[in-house]
Length: 460
Image 1 (cartoon, one colour):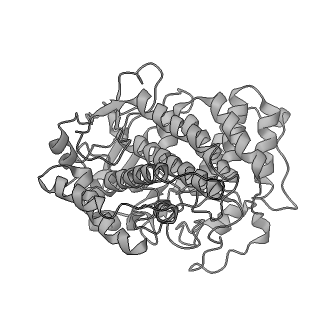
Image 2: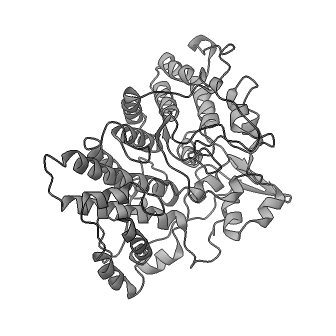
Image 3: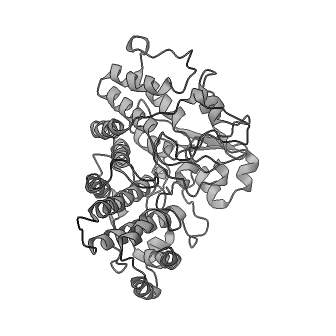
């Protein structure tokens, strides 16, 4: 199967853009390399293709959120697109003809998932292959849902109950046929599709994966929890985070880790806390190494007893705590994230003691084992504020902050105004600003005629 993948990848851009007469030729050529066996389908969903199906195309969210800051010199040396994203310009893409990897990569994953779904249904399900057949179909549903959820955090407005049925969401492509012209669904329909795909995936998937780049029932529960959290459906997020944790709730004990030198990475790839492994792509150089200095306010929130302070940061305040085992940003699912989701949702439901139980279970693995004092309801007047602060410290540089800002900005108590100062000029992003939704690539707009996102800034 691997020998087919390069041709398959080279054709997908034509199929996705759908803007010239080469499309139908590409489709005809693609038909000659469609996978036909379960082994072929496994090669697609298990990342034998490039880029990886397990990757998360969240670079724009990482660059535009407030986990990091840039020096003036780093900013001025960046590309125009990166500078525009970092300062929340209404117009981001300097050259409208250049590919936008976050869009193209996400829809390429959707195309692969659709081809795998179509291929599986053409293979007879037998007693001998039933387990693999089910798992492959479940993987395809999972990866399609994952891609749509990430795309929704970038190119669709935040989910709001009052307007979701009319706000423009994503184009929903549910098969590999490139001929129908794409049009935008509503935000409500976009999230309904994500949920429907995950509901279809869960009973088909193995409880835990053979490899951590594979989908599993536990990972699907976790992705569903993340989805419902972004929708502010906290009762449902609680249900699915709990379902994931009931399968496995192992945490890394940070007391057992050594920070090492500045050029070392303390966390192993595919570690025991990881439910599903994913890397953030593109992981812009501006958020890595010497350029990507951690937000000073965030860095100051770690006390000296917090083991994350030594394990997450180089002496120069550069983040090195990636669960990728290297410099690439991790964008996967972990038990720690599920504990934080369950804790937040329990606090929102008024279950303050249970919420603190979850938070303490995490923090005792993050703080010095001899000095950690568990939080209690009596000494914690703002349980929700504490949980959100710990979520901020635990999940930085994973591409999640942007989604958190989009949902929390809808709550007066948790809304924030982002600011950056470059060469004496201050840039501002108010809560609920239209610039929290990125523009769809112009070549897609031209090819399909679909409506573009409004990016007119609010008055700060």
